Length: 196
Image (cartoon, rainbow, N blue to C red; front, side, top):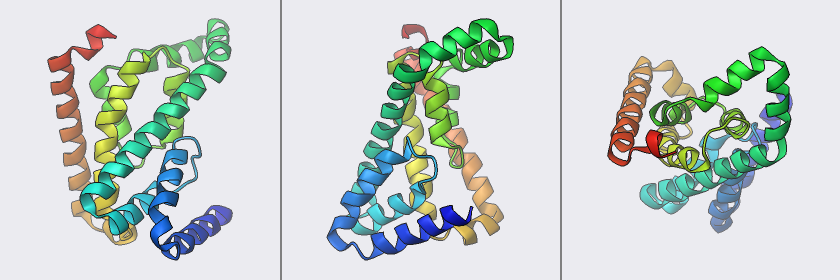
């Protein structure tokens, strides 16, 4: 934990002193956050919003985090899928986990992705070793990551103060309900669960 805190402190100082290059570094780090679990996503989104403005900062962060997560999903599928599928044939508990992930509806998948404190690395890894179709996962990322970026952009660097505020919990619940409702609407409109 101490090492992670040191890394986060160093990243904060580095990004604050990077000037014009800060958004470029942030975009690279946001992309990598999908594959490196310890990177603090909220720091990079905050820097992007402060340097690029709320609209462009959020848009760039959303594209980068979606691409990073989808890349991790594809890498996980390519590197670990066959191994997990073979293991799941022998181990019943593993088969149950893989089947549960594989059978997640589009709305539930988008909701899991939209949870602010959920580790995207493990979500991408788990989805990659399941049988979730690539397009379904990509669409889930596109919906779920919108709410992640808005959440972290809103909270920004005041995370400790926000966590002490009970209104934040209400806002998170409302945000997740909106994410679920939106994903349900998109699913019905485009029939994603049936198509993939």
